[in-house]
Figure 1: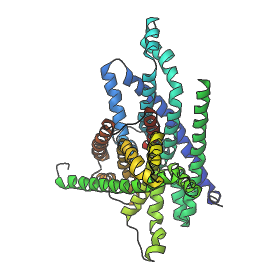
Figure 2: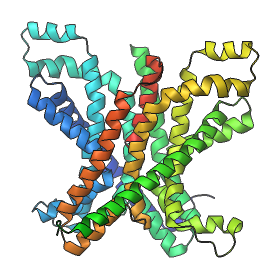
Figure 3: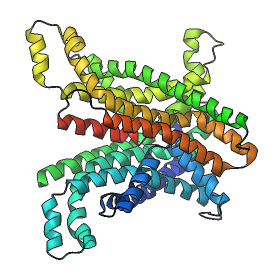
Length: 222
Length: 236
């Protein structure tokens, strides 16, 4: 049976899978928070804030994620920033933060599109009713973007789950790293990688379906 | 040490490898992707289903997994064809991993481009007596591919970013060269900033160019659909 090797090395595959899930969840939460903040910067009425937002997006989108991970993993401790004294915790947090920073730039573009899609009349009405800019964002503009950003956000989520595999390059023993260890112990490359493949698919396929279902429900709700 | 021209020569050698591998991968992926896009649109089930399986299956996988797999097993895969002593050069193992993934993405982009053309184009061509193959070659593909140029350029930036992964299987591209330098001089912060800047300049220029470029006519719905595909795979 394909993937059966995972049960021969459960401690590697399933702890790997669990780490992959953890990095994905923390990374995605981070990306949503960072992305929303950056998107708000990008549509703000103050020009310097817009520039900061634009620089963030362009920088993180146009450099490879591995370079960013290496920077967080090697560079930050050298300039005196450590996430944790524990080596394992340290690389795990570097990986999760890296996922958040990189995908945050993509989330920012999606949310920005949503914010710009809100009818101008809504914003003007809210402002003329006496809401401050921040209140208007909080109660009028941001809630209306929620619906339009769900499908693209799902796609970023899928990309993020796949990208957690890059954490193996800085030494996080997630799913791909687990497969590499098993391969080096058994020389059964096909089995080792097919097992990892199936476990990745077990994460990304349901995510894809969930996004599609949500998308359809929202079409009906509208 | 950054005044030493040898260091910059070292970076440049890495950059050369990076660009070389990206261009070869994109070229190969385009050919394979076009075949799978046409396969997925085929009316014959025994062509369509395997194409869907390839495209959706490969797109759901991490690129790094494919690269590492070909890095380890690439030689063994080709031994039945090229003989017992065959060693797949690392460069080609990297190209295979990158191209397999990119071809699936390009297949989706090309398909979206073909589907987005108005039906009237196909119908008019068929009514004029062109065969299915002729319609594709002389009417549909020239228009669809022109539509695709910006999306494909955007994909090229993704591939350039992804080449930073083939360092893991021992190809001396830009990041790998940088790593060699900082293990020698213990200065990862400076070196990684330089490496990031080089990637940034290339990718930023390409992505700006792809945004400016709008060849041919595309209905808005098609643009949105293509952007959505691109989004999922560009973050990769």
